[in-house]
Image (cartoon, rainbow, N blue to C red; front, top):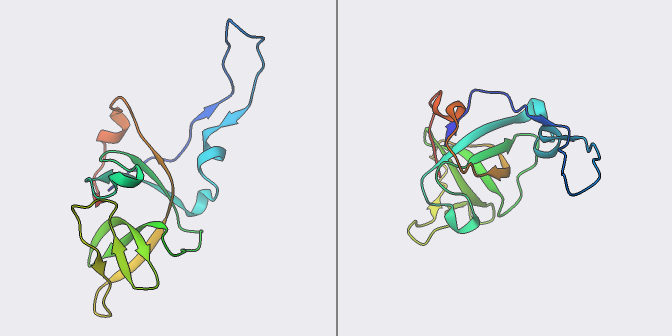
Length: 141
């Protein structure tokens, strides 16, 4: 996953349809996607290990540090110095992929491990964005 060095800010106030009466509907993507702005960061998925739950290579991940981690949550974690996006099995201390190509990873006592946040939203861009080509900081999924 690549951490994107931009703030999550994109307001849309409405759109006009020629087939319907115009109504201005306030819609803020910030409010829709980010519940805890001061505890949220945005990253970009890298890899195919989470594709069976709909997270694909290049998808945008909205990660909330304020949310409490629950069993089977999709998380971003620092695992032995690498940022990874996985499903956490809190009962068996496992990191699970959503792909048959990847085996579960046991979190041992000697591992360096910390949960960085819970993935609360994912977004797929259908055209490349110049904003996403800036910065580095890959986090593997």
